Length: 240
Image (spheres, one colour):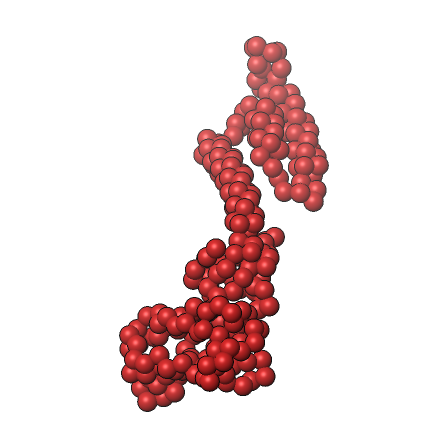
């Protein structure tokens, strides 16, 4: 028995045959589009939408796409669109951050900063101001100033100190009261904690000679004159 479509005059077998041909053609077209689009690149949102529309246009009218599957594909497209927008937003923020770093860097060159370290380039015609990081209250604290030859030129007794940053000033003179030559000096702070000799961290002044900006989004690095580099986050104070 033959079933016919009164609208088109085609038999059911002919419709199925035509649908089969079209489906195969569509499959080949989708494969071609997918291959041409992907290649060595990722499938973009435009290609994804083209594939979805092509699939809808060429689906079998007797076996239309399942509603659940269609909704799932729309959800995938929505997710793809959201991820693309998020990537664009993050890229914009990264670009703005880099510009902000460059502006910040230009304002730091030539300025004085105070940062953790045990060495400082000292102009002994002026006083040097620094601090010692004291982790807990101590009954005595001693600071030694050592020259480039390893000779201790000055010993400063800072007495008892509470926990925090203990400030000190070196006037550029040795223990005999004579002004020493300008140059690079090492500052060593020590105390006794729980019966053990302990070395403490010192924060010393330095001049920023240049700045290194990371090309991969890393932290801004300050190049200190005669002392090497230090991360901006470690700087305690930025002066004139």
